[in-house]
Image (cartoon, rainbow, N blue to C red; front, side):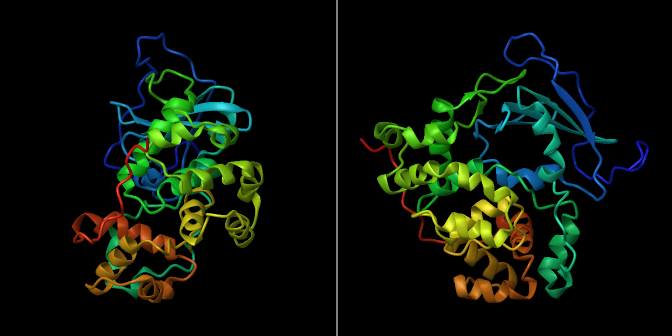
Length: 332
């Protein structure tokens, strides 16, 4: 796309790109790599990236006062922090740390460049049609980071989401590495597979993670390098490899592939909250997993897309669905 071509970005915040400034009293640091991503289609950056952020307290993410999104991540070349700032001419990207080049190169996939909506027909249901009209810039991300998708998904098994997010926040803050660049001192790069594998039992207990979930994370971490290979595998093969780890079931696989691998057809079966939400949105009545799958069947190949549209546009208006999952507490 030529430099003066329209970017197609449509967001509520279209702020100017501000000079890089330190946020913790340190001197400003020049980024190691910069670029401008100009998407071919309309793009809603915040909604596209929302599934990757584990709550507002996620130490791997920060929203700066100027509206820019900062993300700390691990790459094969080392840690990196990238800054995404939406402007009129595109998404301005800057990155710091040894992994800066890879962090910038991954931005198109991160922002949905690999998302192919061909064959998706929103007109099959008025709710889906309206949701698609209201958020035309929603894309499906290919985060590319299996660890950052899979470990939090395991922590979320069978407990309240807020407690799982608190466990992720505590463990990453305590065992991750400081994020490079001019970022708050609280930002962290997630710890590597080896750290998750070797965490002592008391760290899990202090984070409120029971033995079943901690054991699953450690089994996952033991074969982490093989799981990282799923980013280049066909999706059916990637799903099978993930399912081969004891404690990783269809729900956890869907939560992982939808975030890390750009799986447009992933459905988190086993989450009664999601089944009830889909049923309520499409029929006015809650349903179970079988009912949800039947409702989503007309969009096979794009079922995750429909789920994301429903979650984005109706979750705030849906009735509460009980019973609640058990609360996690620090285990002593």
